[in-house]
Length: 450
Image (tube, rainbow, N blue to C red; front, side, top):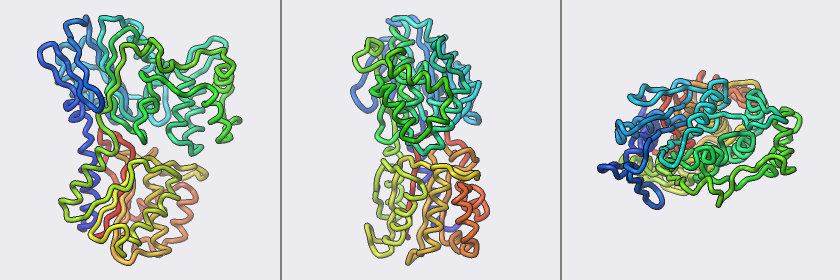
């Protein structure tokens, strides 16, 4: 592996390690005697476990297993019940808690089973139960429960069709989750309502730009500021009326008419005994990568932790940064420019890929058209180790790959048009493959100019 590639992958590995879910939970939770202390971003919380009859641990998301493992280490045999739900391939055996795998990014029958299991457990909760809820990216899909209304009869297939349409529309995750909340029996604060009057402590590993707690995993224990009207407006904005199943459309329209109860809002009694604490986010990872870049001799700059937009369009920014850095803009080499967030891909082709792979391919094409004046490298990767429905985390572009790609410009352009970044990058040995990392704080982009 050449030095530039080693530095790119090394910085990415450092960033991911900084948001190790088990370490973050251990930092946030401590137990001395009967006193459980929660110390994360925001006010600290202390709970006297002797005042509770039962202690449950519920976890959902791509980082559910490592977060739950840390909770087991801290709480030990005080845990009386619970359930852990994670993505296929992410399950790890735990000592005290059962683990289920389910579908992501599109929910499946096992997602429905997991949602029903959470609701069954919640139905047993009372004021003598302490619930530790551990949430990470992916929970919105992994916990699926159609809103129950006998007049409408929303089904799992309705949710599947709606989710696919939303993901393919190019809508940002906040808007995807707004619609999901209003079709769900758990999201948008409805899990908090089901658990009430239990004492619920939620620890969140954020996979959402801006760390909006009502958006992360669709906010199962957080007041929902959005409405049925907002959800229906999103459907119209992306021209999805004809792709929406009749059951989903009927439920949203009934909600707008006031015939279906809204998700619980701020001030609802369901949240009287609920606290939510952020334990880690994208900026945590970027700061770690910045420190490591400086250690390796680069001058670092964190550009943003809120990157959004169409992946192939955002790619032009990074290609421009690679060109400009050779001239000392915004930094003189050797420099490292870091960014994080979550871009989108509007799917128009039939190929295979993900937003990070598509961005890497678009950066490559831009550099083939207008090369950088000196060697430079680019990496875009999902911190969870998966990018779209593939085994890759993303892609990386270094001078060797650019030269290899030069004779194949027309084929690579066709691949981008067909949303087939995976096979294009694979043919150039330009895929970033890490395997599941057990964490998820959106994506990271790295520009290195030695």
